[in-house]
Length: 114
Length: 114
Image (cartoon, rainbow over all chains, first blue to last red; front, side, top):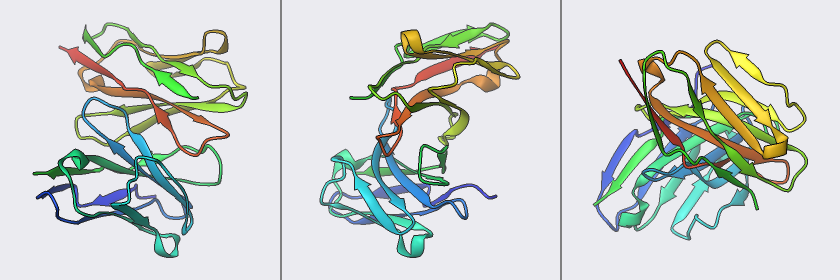
């Protein structure tokens, strides 16, 4: 299996701009997760999908954030009207099954909002 | 509430020393899962181990070993004969049956010098 891939790896944007990140999970993994990691902290859960259904969203996921997983394959995370506080590493992970299976992480997208 | 505490923020050792990374967790669930991940400077989280709450047997994998003690709610990680390549941030995480995502500690930064 190839691992989880994310694109882009780095993104610099100006405050107020919209950005979109893509995640390609390990093939046949039906669960896909998004996390955010700020400097000196552990990753924090944002949202997850079971196939194409978005089953949970964290309170961290403001109205400016939206995630999709069309057809249960790749996923996109969009941030509208970016703010400096959105600067972070955005991590994607995938897993099999429906329970507490091991999550495998991608390399992340590092976002810097100027 | 669920919580993971990694009290050691940074540890510095010299090559070939043994080092133990502490992890204390809080959960009210009787069924839960614990994980350790390694995050090297490249940023990608690398899975190390998954342990369920019913399996208290200690595990050894090469130079790595894990000590799970339910009585003290701890899941400590020991690296024997550390090497420079072990330098990374190590995260302990909790996934409980009632939850939907991993809850990470703040991580311990391990620096191994030659």
